[in-house]
Image (cartoon, rainbow, N blue to C red; front, side):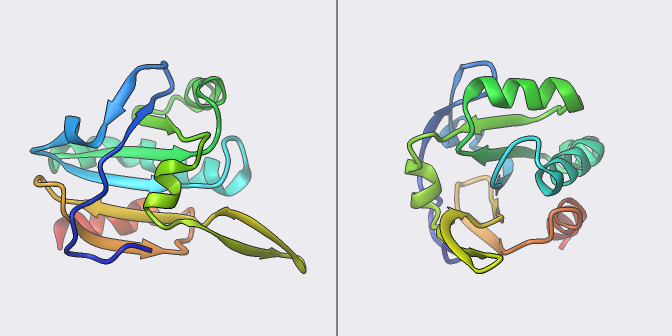
Amino acid sequence: MLETGIKAPEFTLPDQNGEKRSLSDYRGKRVILYFYPKDMTSGCTKQACAFGELYPQFREKGAVVIGVSRDTVASHKRFEEKYGLPFTLLSDTDLDVIKAYDVWKEKNNYGKVTMGVVRTTYLIDENGVITRAFGKVKAADNPAQMLEALEG
């Protein structure tokens, strides 16, 4: 996980509509950048839907929500449409951004060790500096936790 107080690594990735999005596009806004393992899975769906429900409150506080996983643009589009997600989902199939943000880790799932995305959320300020970092977050609790972080 990256340290707080450092400049968030710049990136450009395609969103669920295939449009290129860069972190620098969001200068002047606070960014909730969350990394999750996989579209349509139980925990990831709970997390995304909770971010969606709280999205108007994030917007009121001048923040945007961006989800990142290694799923394809097409998978993100299906995920967005199925659950009516109102925020940006970015596709990092090459793992460049996932690795830059230090969330590609060894995971132990029922005794089987694999590499995967560790659910992690960063709060990035208006100038592109990481102000909060939350590792191994609980999917269902993370959106409310981030709303609280914005207020703190």
